[in-house]
Length: 598
Image (cartoon, rainbow, N blue to C red; front, top):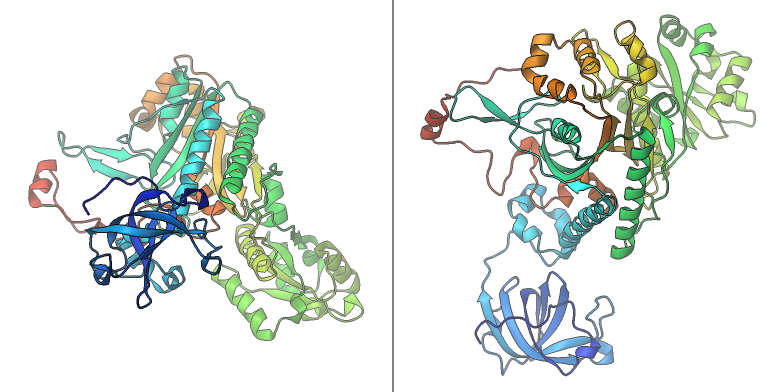
């Protein structure tokens, strides 16, 4: 049998096709030689169809191996009742093979494509080195299908609302956006470089100056930063910008898009999630006060509490000294934590110290009388202890955990500790996606190490009009017209109303320590554009990879990307980054030197 064009895919055959002669193409997923009975599960991207092969009529069956590529022609038949497989859509039928041709053989596999349960034993590096094999697994195909459906839904939603999809350049100039740029040498003038964009930020603002009004792009972005489970050196985001918006316009648009697209994909693929609802809103200050983080997981309502005022007047010397010298004392409740062993409490203390805590004090709430609490409770008067228990919302058998230090350190530890408690107590429901808005960020933060102001988001974020007068006199009190979307404790999207006036943009640059000469050299083009009738504008940039990761219940962003990098940005499939020939060095006018150690 020579290659024949398929008439059907493996996953589409049903009982109504019984009696038809069809041709299928695909991979041998599983082979079962039962001595006189020979079955092959044939797989393509749509599913699996069982082939029933006559060992006496089909030549070469004994040579078939897993992942051989074959073409088969035969007649669709109904399975006997006892042979029906209710686990697959094609389980009522099988194909009685009349002709079979091997289109390509397969070497011994580095890991079993057909056995999903064995994949936990396969290293991630090996999977990515042979990603083309990994992608044959039905579970991996579904991940890419979910991702594709998200992008398709996003496009339709925005197209229906008058947005124009515009591509912006990949070769651009280096700009400060919080991470290192990837640089590309310019061959025609050695010593000059392009940069790969960390985002299309300036281009989309220039599109607004150009009157495009409503723009979006499924944009590739590049950041040379430390690799984590939720980050890659190259990633994809929805980039979106509008002219003449108020903040509420962008919040409503983003919320509506997220709910419609996510719920459509949940229904289409039968994902095990509750429908996505409207987004709660918190200011930055509220989020830090209640949850010790600007990325709160709102699947559970466990809040931190503050006892700085009580500690300042107490007889507990450690807390009293820190509270009196400008530090803070805050705590969190561990439901049922009083029953933890001494070793388990020690593990919590070790965890807290890993993130900068000097210690982790505790009060177990035990006994008939709450005031019989143990731990550091003995250092407080009955009135002070009663106030602490009240602020914590403490219940019998709870464990109260306390961190005392400068504010930044305390919040960093408690925010992480809250998530750990939520996980251990089963409060982080895996069937829920809870999105929320974080609003009214500070425009800038003080960088103690470098003794300068740093943009909390990026230098093009607009200050609130009511706070502009304090840009020079009191920058720390200036709030920004920016907003983040957080999902289950992970930042998903960030956006802002942008600066559109050159005078305000220059003042923000000055605040960030960018002198006028540098402003003109690096940002002269956008300052000039702002003098050409730039409209008020704003936008947002949600992450496509992270949204797919949320919906698929994955903790690692590499699981939802077709060809990801592993640690350090290394690609084992292409064995890159790699060295280049000396002729290429000469052509771009560069030579290799030992890197400067940081």
